[in-house]
Length: 428
Image (cartoon, helix red, strand yellow):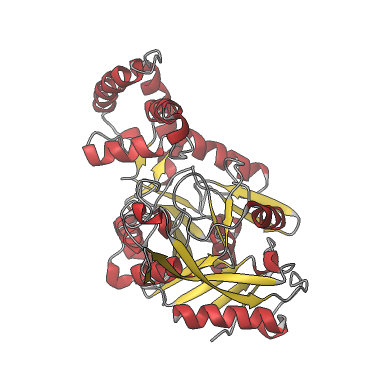
């Protein structure tokens, strides 16, 4: 049985939710391993669009178990709203959703501080969604976090004590931004209520996954965001607060590294980035507008318009090495249909020195240049193509070149938002 990790190879928004939805037929369990409700997966089935924040998109397939791993920071209110949203659309979650008992919980004080801090930064904003993700991860590292098992504890007094201590600290911090104090008792009452509602879904992820593995179940692991936003390996500090890269799949679920059989990276046929920070292959705004309109490049959670760029092979190869990828998925090929020529960034240079390595220090990206290849476009509508051989000649050449540059086969190609606009590929 094959256990697969599906990883965002760029800055997130690569279409992972859609690909999980495509792959889930061949798998039994889908596990989300990091991030929070700051990331969204959009899946279109027929004419119905589903926007998911926390629950893996495997939930749209009856009988597939979906686990929210311990690496995810969980906003219980957002999760309960998502459950209600799915039930309204006749998607049942009661039998198939599981939640790791050691996942950390986002509290109202995390959200309040996140929003206050970001607002105070003015032009130097990081681009956080203000949903409390960063402060929740901070508490995890500071060892003051509240976890899912605390919400369901047989000893509520211990939870109240933790909340009172945390509120004391957070209220001091919030007062510096002129924000009135939060009431720990009110938070406690609400949190206990959340615990009662979530208790039926809670499992110990380590034993849960080991049991499933021994039953020869196929497990598919999904991250949120992308490799270039990894807190260790991304464009720090313009990153997320967790590890979307391969390490997060183990620490965020409790699966042993030797139990992972294959790693697949998802990349767009171009690149996008939300918010501030380096974006080496960024297009001029005229070209970016065309791509943004054709690709509907607006955040599924925030509605923010995404910055658009050409495919960056330097960054993509870095992601492939870091994650030990053995194949790629190429999404949104159709967005490039109208272009006469298409660029690929193949190297960077600074002060006359060329490199094909992605730097850790973002200071590199001041006064640097990119080296590009230009490829002829296909200027043909690909949105109804259903197999690799039917793609226009120049589209095949473009995909084969990316395969050649990265050393990875492109196993799946997507040419639109619908489930039906996805097919297995044979690039080489």
